[in-house]
Length: 275
Image (tube, rainbow, N blue to C red; front, side, top):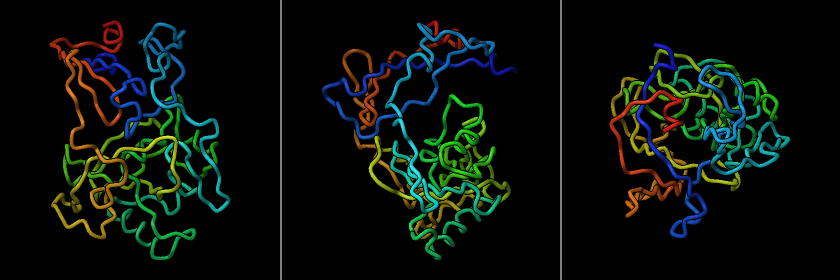
């Protein structure tokens, strides 16, 4: 089946960030994706006006004009998220997920670039590097102050609990998508990150609170460096969703309002936009 043939249910969303008096400053607002162009179903670029595509609406927090700052110490700060990344995005080649976590530990034991709080980014942190306007996010990042960014997959520290706990999420820096693979079999790249200054927005936690070994068994989190141990980001809120009288549900974390109507129809992408 071609990608255009895939059907999907439609979730209607009302973007209300910073306009809802009840939550004018949400804890973890979403940023723009970077997309500024619109396309037909066949992939041809078209005028965005009235399409309601991402390139038309451009919903979310705008990126800072000078988003990435070279710190002149082989690190780069993302002023959107406040995260500090190693300038070199390929320090030691391909590794299994288990070896990737061990490699980060070795960097911290040697006080890499003057710091010992490096970590393997969680899936939200790694996805924050994606620019959806680019044919290759990796190539684009190499023009933003980084070097050696690979047109390949990068491990996150987040286990794929919703799929199989012997697999972990990775991000493909060519397509800007995420998927998961076996922790002990597949070899992907490692990109160290650490918490830096306050950014334009704060990323939310992934929600993961447990840790798992390479076979998928639950283990004690202490010292693993996994997402379930570090739990970096904004808390997901104990009362995250509020049902409104207007048949919408507000996500109090992002301040987005979602339709509460549901639906029984399937749509291709163009039908979804028309709907």
